[in-house]
Image (cartoon, rainbow, N blue to C red; front, side, top):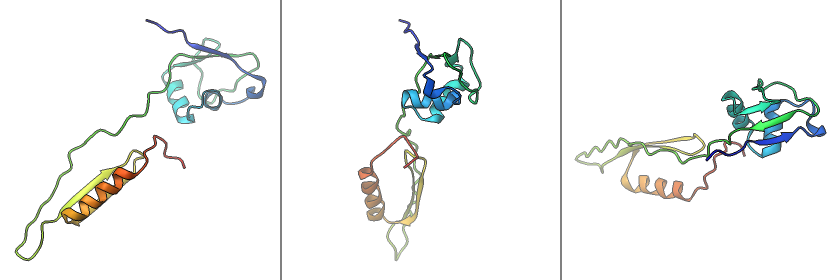
Length: 133
């Protein structure tokens, strides 16, 4: 089943705006998402794939052929655990976690209790697909 593209006539308030900014303002998508769609040719202005920096003119028709991919959860990656048991010490490990916003947390030489506390704390964080506050 093929869906019809969304077609929008450029409102006067957006005349002269860059295509990527106008798409973001009209749809609520991020500017980066709009730029990615433009790069894939999924946004047309008067039937032509424009450059993201092209300026809109009065009466132009924007065709939105696709929507951005929904933000997914990060894929699970194996976490190497370096357990070293010494005669006088408890086992330690190194842990690395990549959050949804791309921030990497690295914990080295922690014991099992510390790693558990970190994992619990990460589980309580709200996750957003946006890296902007």
